[in-house]
Image 1 (cartoon, rainbow, N blue to C red):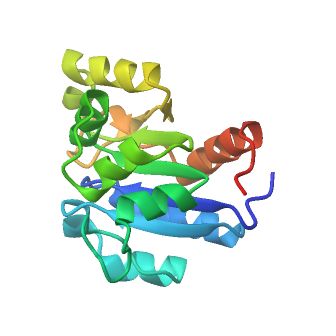
Image 2: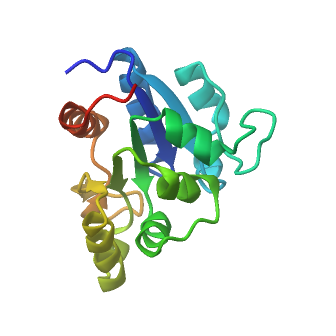
Length: 187
């Protein structure tokens, strides 16, 4: 499936796997997609906005209220433009917000406002991933219609092996292509 001309929002929440979001963004742009990156304040501690601006050729959205760039509200304008919102990495914090309808930053507000498909790629420490609360939140967001690109098992940044490693960028691209192939194209 071609991603040429498709509008994708890549949301990056704060985890070490944020570096993989840069690779994901690059792959999407190389395939012709128009990509806008939305970074949480925690994500910006792991990877800078300059990286995503250079990769996308677009300004990075990070503030809920930015009347100069988004007079109607970034969450509203980005949601209206996006054909899919992809959150990679999706931290335990983001999953909790999505599961409970919390909207206290641009990314969580955008995810609530989006009428297009939303796909999340969880990433976290194995101990966090195995917690009943996290698994409950994953089940809830899935029940609410968000797609999940399950994390893998492998070497984690905490220097342990286990489940919770964010899916590889090419796996996430394949999931994006599958979702977009099944969804009607927005005008």
